[in-house]
Image (cartoon, rainbow, N blue to C red; front, side):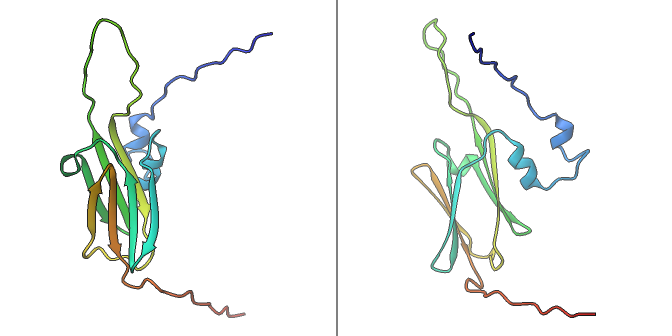
Length: 145
């Protein structure tokens, strides 16, 4: 008996599911539905939250947009496909083109003042100052009725 691998159809989310028309979902949920998300790493260093995003092969001034809203950092990247056909034979391209978005929930204490972003060797680094980087947890007393 031979096992045959079945290819799944390439399905896209219908526009009515992602356009916030039918469902009022947060942008971070919609971003996570996409097939490809931007890979990131997050850490704290010297009173700043550092978010590094892997976005090679783009022009940072033209193709990357960064915004902070309601405690969320949103990184949007637009990568355009360059069409080149050399010779008569078809070749395969596994490069990814299109729009890519990553939304990162920011910890309490992040300030949108003095945010800095730098792009080097395909890595975008966003430095966000923490206004209270050493906030301690507080135990909440429960009243019995």
